[in-house]
Image (cartoon, rainbow, N blue to C red; front, side, top):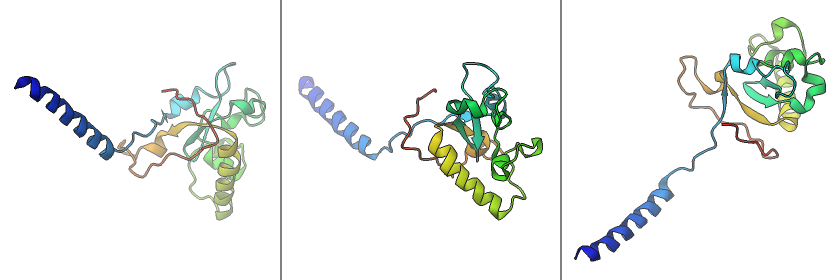
Length: 159
């Protein structure tokens, strides 16, 4: 009798596993979270290391634009940090090298959205997100977080 129950039990497990598989949401690709300190390591000062910058909390690998963003290049001040305000204002002033968009004009915010989509998202792969984009101020997960869509890039998984 035990020999007859084992195959029956195995079949039942297979059926349950199939049913469970259908109900489970597919696992999304993990996203990399960058603290301010970690992002600073990718400021273009080390030869051979990637160069990262964040805009609107999205971290881009701008290494392919090393002539613009590398050590001593024109826009090197923007890398290794979230430079959202500077991008919106098209500014390299030290006080604008921040994520803070408080007080930006409607035109500056529109410019930010356009540059974010037409320049950064179209040219540079996304490698992660700043903690401000993924987490709430209390450190809890931001339930409204959605990764940016960038289907034309094959992003390598560094996690």
